[in-house]
Image (cartoon, rainbow, N blue to C red; front, side):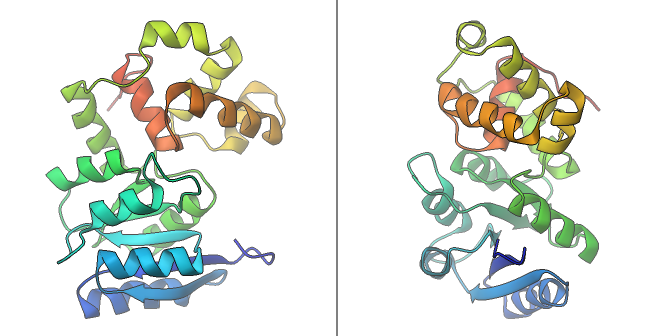
Amino acid sequence: MTETGTVRVVVADDQPLVRMGLSTVLATEPGIEVVGQAADGGEAIALARELRPDVVCMDIRMPGTDGITATRALCGPDVDDPIPVLVLTTFDVDEYLFGALEAGASGFLLKDAEPVTLVEAVRSVAAGHGMLANALTRRVLREVVTRRRTQPVTAARASELLTPRELDIVLLLAQGMSNEEIARELYLEVSTVKSHLARVMPKLGVKSRLQAVVWAYQNGIVEIGG
């Protein structure tokens, strides 16, 4: 974000009317600035790297370079300075969503979501909270857990790597809590929670809050309810 707290956004979608609509909704919201628009994944990568926005709203199905490839390029496991991506889709059950999750997406949102939901999602991702409480994200997580894809760190190994406090934080994170909510729950400073998370993610071999939650579900640390 800028010093004034403005959230800077790049919108990527191959359909001009959709791209314009999303941009208009966001641009008319106080504290959000649409700094660029892209018609495909390649353009989205170039714009994001040049402009360094706080969030990229990424369409998942685009000609040429698709949204998954673009997401991986911006926030994948090999990216040292990732740019958060909020994936937008017209399908609530879409094989591509699992690839976007593995590519490092911070969350998912249906394109027909209410404008207020889009705004909340962008602000949440920009703040580093991801979209853990979003119903679509929960469904994607449930499917990933069902597949039981292996992660580089097992649950048994986690008990050796994570301190009790770090494990507490991961459990609350998996409930969709923000840093502020975790801090209140554990009677900690927000800065302390951030420091713990900064140490936890490398231990688990992940780079985002959502990936940490995926790891926790896959390894049976927590279970998805509802």
